[in-house]
Length: 291
Ligand code: MN
Ligand code: MN
Image (cartoon, rainbow, N blue to C red; front, side, top):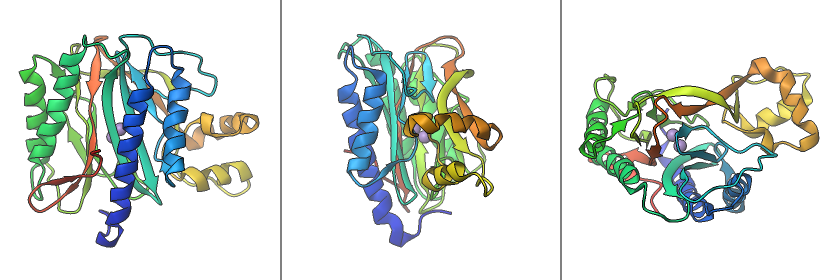
């Protein structure tokens, strides 16, 4: 269900907090910074603004397209020239925003072309939004913007509608044309997230990216699981957010938890992503995650 009109102020506030967290994350991605500390800085900021992270900060690098969050003991640091997708989100009582930008660590310019393609594409997608529009019109605009830069969209990653406590709701927004028969409706909240690559144009599943999600409410009788479910509901979370002494308990829940692999570019290409969450209006889009 799309948000109720009386709840829209909460969705807008979540959008503003998410945008500020994204930009803070970009500033924190400097050579030598610990990946884990960057994620924790982003998530602490979201909590300091009275929200909760809607999912663990994704800090995927280079040919990793998405779904990497640092583990609790991650000791890796960012290096000059790393192409980092800072993909973050906050929620206020289930009102979620989801936004991403790609930064080059150290402020160099070697990846500007890829970053520009992702930027052009998200703006082209946003520019096509209005009530009743065919989703495929967005997909064609996204794809064309990336092709104009001589690059490929990642065709098996999509944007998505968002509902309360549901990050990936019913509709997908493909980044390639000819894949959707749906239309957008006024009042829907939609994340538009093109990925541009100089590789194969698709992703394969890589190793576990430290992101988990409850498939459903756990049964009674497991106090820790019930406590975690009350906290995270069906939103993605990570063991890093759980007390060190309790993390072992997650292993018991293997069947109740969905675990996400890192999405890696199938041709080992570099990947840039840009994402905004928008509200569909009668005549266009209200972008909730601009700063
Ligand atoms: Mn995202
Ligand atoms: Mn998203």
